[in-house]
Length: 310
Image (cartoon, rainbow, N blue to C red; front, top):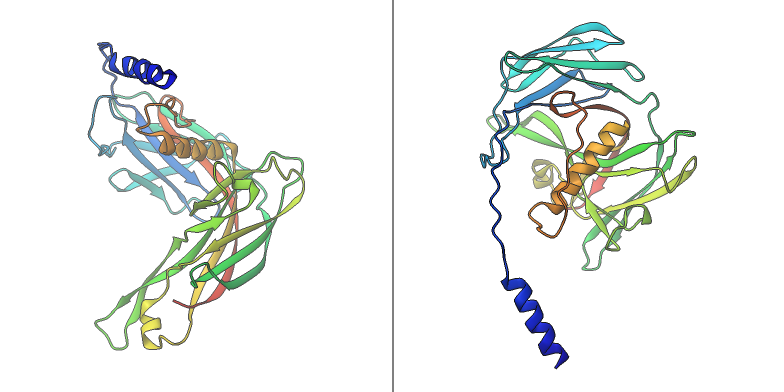
């Protein structure tokens, strides 16, 4: 009887609905800035227009008529030039750790937008302790990477870990084919470390972002596993009985707080999008009079050559 009553109550609750009409006021587009700087490259920024909340267009309009200025410690360092629609850059100016930078965007018909950031002074202290090949549950090859990360003392720190494999593009019009381009891809990884556990015992991803709350001013060992790594199919096809030597980069970055908050908010939004039972997740923004992110990070990269068995 109790179960029947519960079903009736649920049916009544779920059957009742009220339509509330709300006139959403129109809001003109904002300038959206996306620029993440680090010492290994030059200044580059993406500029687009935001959408009205009821605009279901999935494509964002590129901004092609803006002036983008970079200031270092309050003095004009240079301007970014448009390389492609929405993409502004200047290969002659490079950011340095520990320096205050300000980005300004001036566009006709819009308020000037600006943001400030600083690249962390110290790169992370970490070592690659071990790489092990072992058999998986179904007989597949599993590659386990163990790193040791030493927290930067007396600071609140924010980190990011990834492993990149270099893949190659060949020109097959010549014999033998020659490499014409190489580019890194992030490898999909799994970890069982308590630092990343949420609702399950295992966490999967390509980039792991975390803070130092669980290992403040100390060292921590972290383990990551993968079963598939992008490899050079051409080299492997020449001798499929031998392992392929894959060039890897083990990367740990120190993020500034703005970048950490931005990345975590983006992850939360992706996890909750389309779920009517969760509260909206707003993406972190540090752009004055606009939207987006201007932030930086410092990284340490360790190269490693892996004997990979496809």
